[in-house]
Length: 133
Image (cartoon, rainbow, N blue to C red; front, side, top):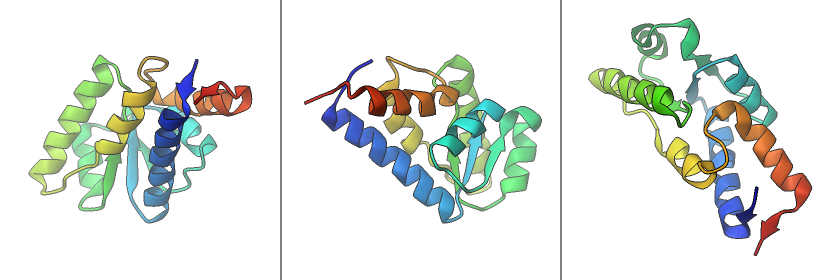
């Protein structure tokens, strides 16, 4: 597991943006409880909702017109869920943020594909000092 320093800094910036936007009221949608735990370990303190306990229509209805960030996994199921949520939110006139998800997984996609592994990935990087210039 190696990232160059530039990639690490971009990853850290994306996670910091996720934390900040959550603190400012954005709702984050993830797939399951382990994803919530990982984001909490990274410092996300705001509202995180799991899609595993609700239908997509219920999620959209519950979140309503609030700012929403979709953080599903980077696998086939996560991609399908993201696309369905984007379509449903868009029908309400809400454009969910999928850019943070894209930025994060464009960096870590070779190493991990699940949100639940993101915190451990970051902590291992920081502990191991395997960042290369």
